[in-house]
Length: 111
Image (cartoon, rainbow, N blue to C red; front, side):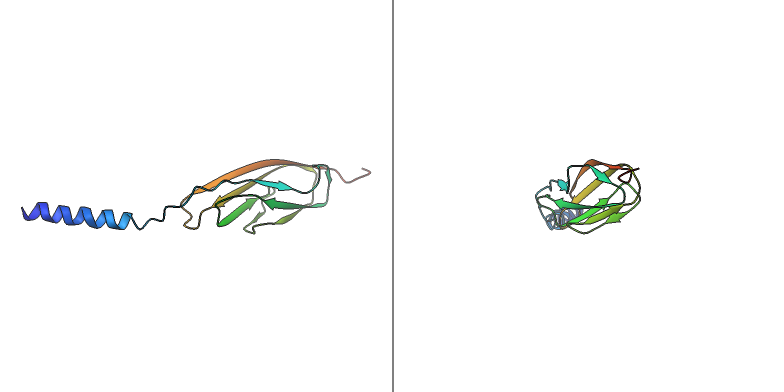
């Protein structure tokens, strides 16, 4: 009988600790960027974060550069195709969503 009481107390403790988890809405990641996707290297691209239900952000620009700014800008130095990824996190960091878009950077104008 003592064992059952101990297991019941342990179960209630685990249940109460689990209820401390903040029930957060799942974020939705989205972004746009300046221009009509006809950029000539070197160029600065300005990103507009349109994520919802998000608290923090991680950007990967496809050239080994990252940012945690909400609304970053980034300089692309070389021509090429860059896969830009935004990951948007909830306040607890337990939930996240991502969005990926391709940016095509052209060679310098006149070359």
